[in-house]
Length: 322
Ligand SMILES: Nc1ncnc2c1ncn2[C@@H]1O[C@H](COP(=O)(O)OP(=O)(O)O)[C@@H](O)[C@H]1O
Ligand SMILES: [Mg+2]
Image 1 (cartoon, rainbow, N blue to C red):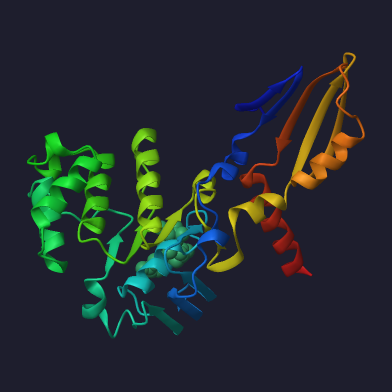
Image 2: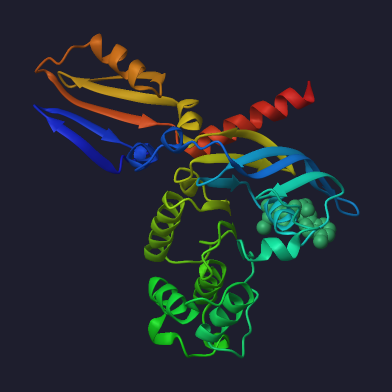
């Protein structure tokens, strides 16, 4: 694996980090932001389809003002879970509470307080982008809607296409309009089902900046994705597979489950060791070498979140077979 970012280059000692270490650059840690109120509480939630199990005994809580990532491959149950949370699907058993309300029974009360971006945009093709956003926004709020709509169109870089019919848009542009529809009324909690799939890198980064800003302002974001790099940008993640939760933790703690390969070049000879992915383990290993002048290069290759998650999955599968 090629290290992508070089962070130190001191007196001939070069440290490089793989991009998965970028988690350390997140502006706020989950612990710093921990709040006591749960925006979402899910208990023993099950959803059986005719022949398939959609959700298998899901229990989790989402703290207010955090970004919660629901990570899993296709068919894991992400969309099913989000639909249960926004009240568009009746669970087989178990209970769900969103902002203290029952999404099915209190659907109308919840509507004004939540935003929902479905996996497949549900827009009116024969309305313009702006009219779609005004339409969805007016169903939930009326105050200052014109300005809110213009602002969100600008964020999504759609101002110059605002009056074009949505049917003339590409798939990625429709996703952006759909994201605007979910956010325009400034909801307290937003459910986003794969919001950045098919969106170009620049807007993906812009979207994550906006998500972080919203969370800092106290909005709760519940975001599904199958992209592991996005897991690193969440405060907490649940990894879902075959309708079951495999693990719930902070991205940092998940990364720490992996190993790091440390390579040190000394007098032209390369020595490799595998250490835990923690600063303590790194310090301990480096103490063996000291910072001698003849050490010319040090590189670190932490396991990627993908490989850590694959290891967790295979360990769980082995346990289940026993
Ligand atoms: N309406 C449905 N009828 C029958 N099975 C469904 C339905 N919706 C989803 N499923 C099944 O439930 C499982 C989870 O699907 P889904 O929630 O869409 O997963 P994800 O969003 O993670 O890709 C899959 O096996 C899928 O085939
Ligand atoms: Mg889905």
